[in-house]
Length: 151
Image 1 (tube, rainbow, N blue to C red):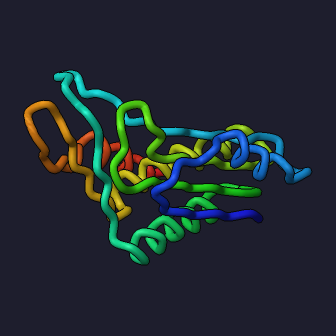
Image 2 (cartoon, one colour; image 1 turned 30 degrees about the vertical axis):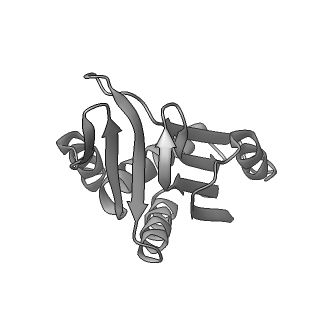
């Protein structure tokens, strides 16, 4: 099984990452999710600054992938999360999961993303027209992650 967990400043190429996972001959599905920097409902966002705890972040992401492997029959997983300053519409995160069947790939990708949002040590600062401020964790993200403990 191919597993790649990366935290990096540089952008990534979705097509390259997809092709790497799709090469497995037992793979019947590859599900990808790519998160982008988007402006909030209030508007005025110029960009995000993402910080992390090196070493601990990669370990947390690897643990999340390991948990997904225990729950679903997977053939490959790639998780890439960017850090540093990112402007509007830039890629922030990619979760890609390969499996023999689509439902396992969809479920595992959703699980990984939900857990990433609540269990990986990333901090996000918004740069807006009015200034800068740290973003607090969202209750909706916590609720999404909690649904998996009931399954």
